[in-house]
Image (cartoon, rainbow, N blue to C red):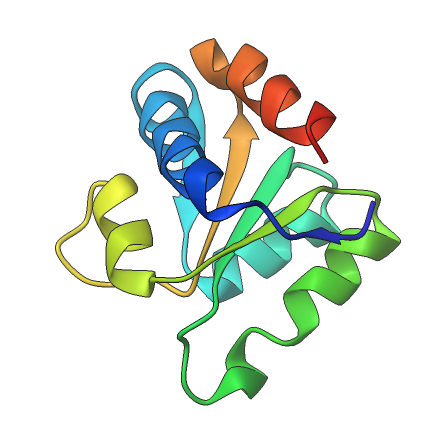
Length: 113
């Protein structure tokens, strides 16, 4: 599964997936934790913010996600990603570990691409 570009109108759906998974399933926040979740085979979906600087911090995530066949979606804003994850600061990446009630949302967004 390659890095997925979602259309602008679907970006809010990606944030909604994070919010629903946070409430009804389990997510992890931050690049180090996301990397570990992918490598351990626990990540079901990875979301990476495009506006991380320097880019080297997150550049490896789509590559290892692809190796492990984990869908990886890019969103424009680390601030919005952090807010969706329920934290007061931006985050470069979030991994969904347990989808909870976001399972159908994830399936729908992946089937559109």
